[in-house]
Image 1 (cartoon, rainbow, N blue to C red):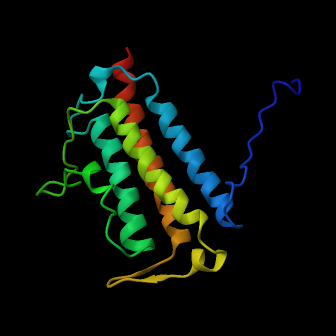
Image 2 (image 1 turned 180 degrees about the vertical axis):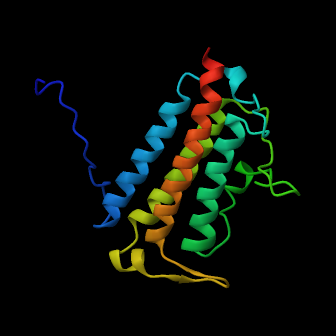
Length: 174
C-alpha cells in the first residue's frame, strides 16, 4: 500500500475548545459525518417512507436533533430552549404510546438544517466550557450527569439510530 492510499484514522481536536473537550467534540463531529454520509443522495420519496414500525428517515433525523437539543439545554445548560430553536421542534418527539411521533412533509435538506442548527449551538456552548466544567456533574431531580457523559450518550444515541437510517435507506436506493 502506498502512502497516498493509506488512510489516517485520527481525530483532529475541535478548534477553540480546551482539552479534553476538543477531542470529544472531534469524535462527536465524526459521528455526525457518518450520519450525514448515511443519508447522502437519499431520494426525496425515501424521507417519509415508513418501515413496519412506523419509522421514517425524516422522523429519525428529527428525533436525533431533538434529543441533542434536549440534553444540551435541559441537562448541560439547565435552561429552556432559546426562542430561535423552539420553531424547529413543533412536534413532540414521542406520541401518547411512547413511540417516536411521525414527522412528515419536510425535505431532507430541512432535516439536515435542523441537525446543523442544533449542532452549532452545542459546539458553541461546549467550546466555551472549561475543562473543569466539562466534568462537573449537573444535579438534576432524578440523576447527576456531566457534560462529558452527555457527549458520550449523544454519540451512542446517534450511532444506534444511524443503523436504522441505513436500513431505511438501502431499500429506497434500489
